[in-house]
Length: 251
Image (cartoon, rainbow, N blue to C red; front, side, top):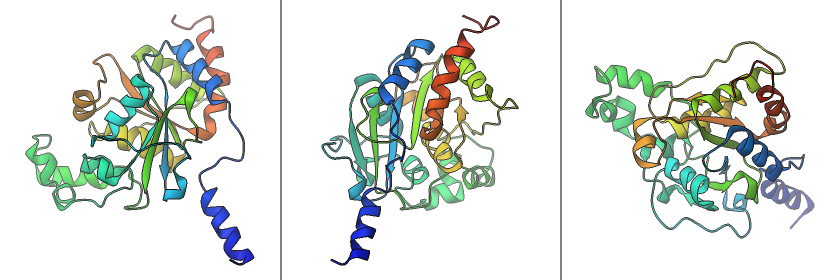
């Protein structure tokens, strides 16, 4: 193999690694203790090829939804990866770049049959605006509790109480101020809102959850969902204790 091919191979293998080594265990501890989280923040990686699967990480055995996989890492401490055949939710698999959009989703038929919208057209308009990774760009999704992650995640998903989300929102604005503009539709919350959008945009996104994630993944009535691009985790970890300890902060 020539020098150019060697370089390209190394580039493929290193494609999802960050240049800066982050203290994930320390950041996770800050998030968990400061926010009193139930479970762990979840590291999520969208691997583009088999080479993107971290060494020693095993595939998930069951076929479930992305939101259930996040819950498995969050509440059980599991570390694993899932290829497209292990993602049972077509909408979630599409949002994450694992699957092609089905005709029933594209036309609006699927959500219309669930009774979520007045018309197929309303469903279609919604689907067209759902954040999604380009179809078939992702080979597998990889999951771990943030404190134990053996890989650099693209996004960290947090499920927390409204009070904790308030502190995270204030942390989002701590350095530069401004306003938070989150986007959601009450569907595809953990997959599109909390994973695909932060991955694609580089911005934090907050979501109310969806019927599927609340029904299947154990998100409680008093919990919300958000996703953080991994690159800004250190900034979050530095600002969060300051925000929560502020004199006017709700304890």
